[in-house]
Length: 125
Image (cartoon, rainbow, N blue to C red; front, side):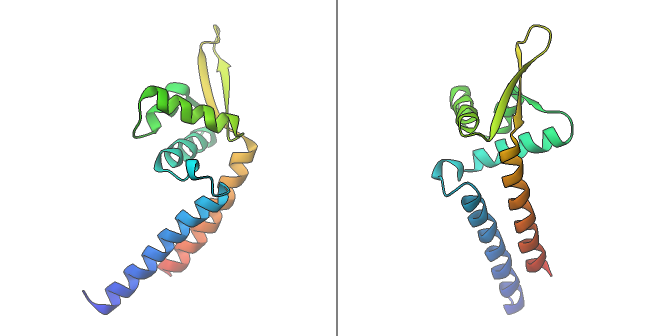
């Protein structure tokens, strides 16, 4: 590989590592949240809510890429218990549950995304 290409890839790899480290710091280095599955869940729920279409419990479970239904539901329960997500009953019969980000999660994620956006911009600059 060319030296320039290698140098650019090193900068990019460092930016990606900084993104991962910032995620870890954002969630107080809780190893349970430093997983790909929580990333898909938390980011997906937040974006869906921002778009005015909060996810149902089923959609939130499908957002995760692995684990049994029980494991996926346990992840959501942990995020609810830790104050990152809230489940709301909706519909005439109250059988549909929506999963929304809490203001706590939204503040953490906005900070994380802004910081890491700047890291990536610098790496690409």
